[in-house]
Amino acid sequence: MDLKKYIRSIPDYPKKGILFRDITTLIKDAEAFKYTNDKIVEIAKEIEFDKVAAIESRGFVFASTVSYLLKKPFILLRKKNKLPAEVHSIDFELEYGNATIEVHKDSIKKNEKILVIDDLIATGGTAEAAAKLIKISGGNIAGFIFVINLYDLPGNNLLKKKGYFTKSLIEFPGH
Image (cartoon, rainbow, N blue to C red; front, side, top):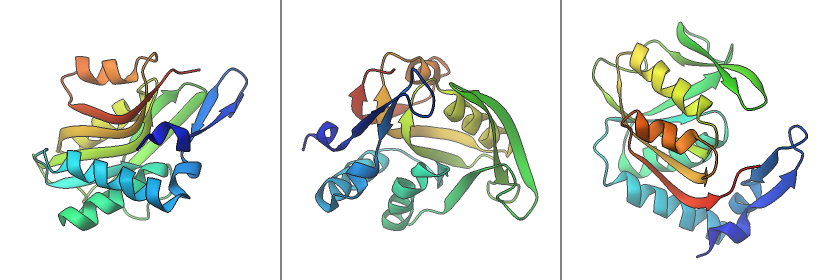
């Protein structure tokens, strides 16, 4: 299945000069959504991991399927002030601003292998912040799975240079 045809491109969102790759058109198509989840689960089965983590919020859509089907605990990496218990926090830069992500301090045990799933990798700021957050929580990165890789932006290569396994289903140019 050609998943690219299910991705809507929105120019100048969220700011001028950004070409936003929108997955809502993919997830509203039942067949494309099922195919995408099946492929992510297929990749995840080849990775040794203890828990799956997802980056808010579009990563939740795909990681929950992996968690459910592979019977792995699911960890939420959320925006600042969205988690009610004690958290670890990481501030980072986005392509179009600054952000903070957090995880509950009791979500990850020492040396657990965490698979991170998100919808898209662009500059790598959010994924790198997720890796740091998992490390300060005592865990290790088992790998990253993305639906979309913006191949001419540095994110995927940044993660690979740090020694992380990465896999994406679709490749698009950035901007």
